[in-house]
Image 1: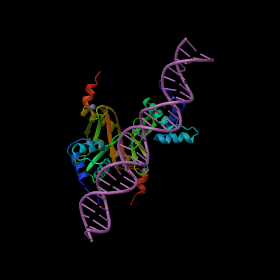
Image 2: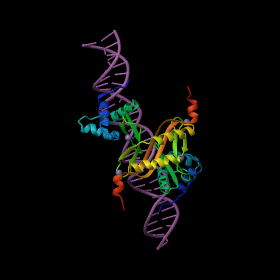
Image 3: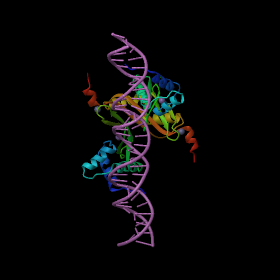
Length: 129
Length: 129
DNA sequence: AGATAGATGATAACGATTATCGTTATGTCA
DNA sequence: TGACATAACGATAATCGTTATCATCTATCT
Ligand SMILES: [Mn+2]
Ligand SMILES: [Mn+2]
Ligand SMILES: [Zn+2]
Ligand SMILES: [Zn+2]
């Protein structure tokens, strides 16, 4: 039986308190800063447990996994390659066309991840010639 | 000036000889098996060089990067979580809607990656109750 | 030939994540 | 309540893909 321990509850609270996308290290540091230090292995185990219960969501970026609250509708992400800002978006038609494409290839879909890369409004502005 | 050395040409030849998606280790082993051993660092450097010249393409999966020939139209991938099989697909409308979504959020797109997970036809068949 | 710029290969280093293991907290039941 | 079983914790070692170092090599130019 999976336990929702003090540490896991704290991780969940931090994640649910914003719309940020956290990595394990950031969460460990946040808890440390809040006076409640936590072992890094506990963070990883806790995040895996919380995700398997559907209490949090995650996205797998090139180097690391990032976690976010699960109480939002499904969405995908655009990542600014300059400042790291993550913008969310959802497009119903894209979702449907994905299902169609999968069906066409005989694939039984269990999930997908669409990540777009580029410059956010801020960074695009700053890098004009 | 980047050089297209014997090793890099060999990597390119292997990749261009099929539609597979190779990781660095598989390529090193393939060259070894072909009698032409190669240092793993040389493989990584060679792949990076070839990709930066646009001679090969890559996709970043959860754990590792995989390389494929670049002489195909842009496409995205479905990965079978059971057997690892990678199926390719492309959907013009999805591409266009992505551009629209990016524009709407003020993002200047430089790339994107859509990966769908699930069971391929084979594996779905094998896992029927 | 000598000089120069990359490239190579062995290997150390890195960063994210997982495994190990002794210790600790929590829930169940006599 | 007390004892036992089970899961979680935390420190730390290990793993894995990838990159950095550094001492040769190699091709090319003068
Ligand atoms: Mn999100
Ligand atoms: Mn492909
Ligand atoms: Zn930005
Ligand atoms: Zn399969």
